[in-house]
Length: 591
Image 1 (cartoon, rainbow, N blue to C red):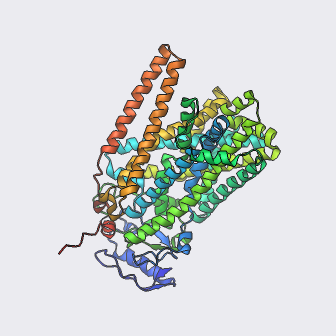
Image 2: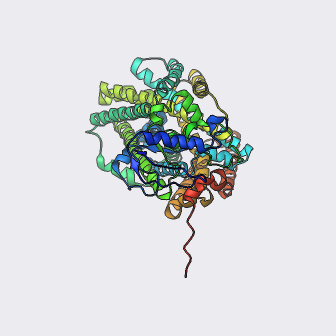
Image 3: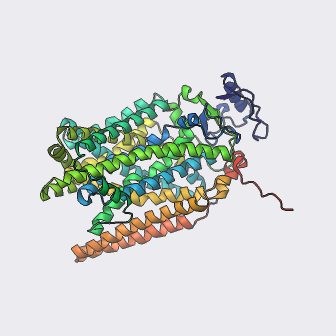
């Protein structure tokens, strides 16, 4: 749907949005009016301004007089959620899920449920932040924190991207070994091809990219539906349900189950996914330099920069067909903004429900397989699930089970690699305002993951590669609060979010998630220290315990500083016109 009769006011206030038509002429008039009225139009040699949020032409959400919830509008938001959900079904998830299922059966399924629900809330907060401020999370962090603080957060996020890419590299290599018999180190080297595949698909546009990821998720789901079919006689549905609702239950040994539980959480809710999703919402239907208006204070820090949307336009992700299908939401008020959040939230919920099914299926298949193995074989599956799963699945569930598992792992590895590359582009440009060609970014991200994976595989062997996957998931869990806390601080700040600020129960739950993540990490650290004290009572054990204690204190101190720090920037300074649209309305005077 396009607008037939809209006149933009000189002061940028919301125009009268009556007269919605279906012709194509109104769209060009709107764009022409924007460019003519915009004194800081980037096409006239000036700087890039805050990112423009776009909506599908069927949306009719350009004012708070929107028609309310409509299925057609909701369907037009489908896409970004599947890119985000890929991080919930990557090879790191397969590794820790199989370890959990083989060692503890269905008892840790509740971790998957809690993690997915927490992840859903966090992703909705990302949507809310982007839709309300017209900035993505990385760029807001650059505005909010000092140079050294934002650089430190950027480095931590880059470490998280590498930590998430390592399981994808190793998992893809194991999939190639399962399906084609390639040696693991050769498979690791060949994973560099996936970066090139990503760039090729990216050039076809946003819709094709989203459809490709949705197809991969569907493929993984179909593979595990087949796996569950093969194992249907051995799966106890009641035990699975009890495992999903046994909140807080940790099986013995506690230090091992807590380590696996934290790994499962870290493998699901990844730090870079927060930056990715907030940026995808902005880029969803355009957000290119041609549509950017003078919404922000030109003197604000970072106002004169070129951000990810231009990079993506140059690479072909934002093609003309996608851009022409959008209607700007520059004048969207609080009601319509909340409708955007609802639509995107529903899409995210569906995508994460699919990811939850896949992760639960992996645990159930591993548990069923382990029950049919001898003690020694079961321990092999626990220690190195990706290495030993093919032969054991073949022996227990048949030849086809091995093939389906390999295909699911291959699809998971390829897709996760691509989302990591895309997130890296936003993170680098948002935090430090540094542009790099997508091809170079893909090679850098992939090389930093391939090198350690290759070294560990050649020196330690396949078992060492699998341990590296679990360690990467633990690192991601420890890294998560450094992205989660700034997000929650922003969305709870009325200075930043206006009337869209999170309050009440939502605010309490968001803060509770942050505290629980930190507490879980510290609990896992304490359990590891306690276990080391028993198994290594000598000087070596003492040094390890002291080092972990110092690490825990520093970790807690830094996070406390982040939590305590008040938001200093305001949307009124960064994006005055947007703030006027969502500013809290003054209370009516009492008589």
